[in-house]
Image (cartoon, rainbow, N blue to C red; front, side, top):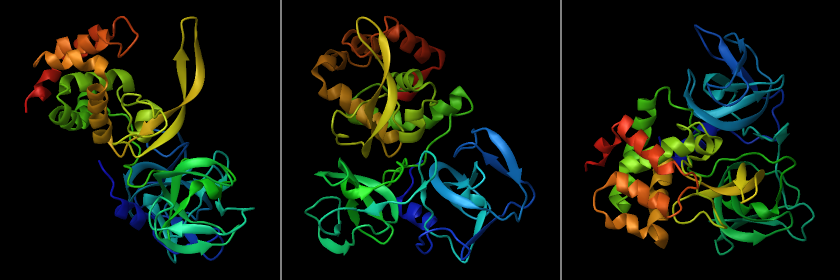
Length: 355
């Protein structure tokens, strides 16, 4: 499930270019069947049309989506076409080589610029903090070729205050606080596994999260059966956007930092409730490298919060553990523990508690 950073950069590949013009061409390579055009970067996105093998493409920008093993390459990148819709880059041939395709903003391609308006150039560091070795300086207003983001030192820059640092295709990191994005893209965190699609069956989902849940059990003594049941209930069987995009199965928020396990923080629209009513708002949630990160952090979360300590004094008793964390305030639903226990029994999840 994990995607190595080296593999990500190799998939991006090619020579940096300012824009995709006449010097670079791209064509569909899908012998035997047309290439589907979809509304988003996943095979479960709505199909809007298809393109025949050999069709020339007008590519606008790229997004980080479901990993596809195509006829040309295995890749998580999806290309937005000039006429609308997305196709997997796994079925696209580039000539002479794949360029640094711009990232997609909400409505159009977005090309980041270095510190426009700043008094000096933008320093490129060897790591994602100001104490890193200075590799070079980029002139104000120069185009940047960003491949992913890393969570590092918080910087109050010319554009914003942020702990995100942009990793450049040419090597090194620059503080995103000093980078202007004409339109805000959703970038992958460096080393993050591609977004997932919901499993086709309950057993397929359980198989996906069982070993990560067991890893959390080995490290923090949270029964895997409880963790799996919570993941089912809280992620909607892996269908939530937070789970699909950032591998967060439990809705753990950032509260300023991603903590010891998550790779970053990302803002999502969510629903919050008080004693009077519920309302829509935005909150910062932890983004994980993969499902294992989420399961391990879930175990750590229960361990470091003193209110859940009674659950860890019960020995091996998954159902009592579920009731104990519910009683301690894990969820406000009065049927939360009952729902977990039903799921645990119905899918025989205690089979995963055996080491």
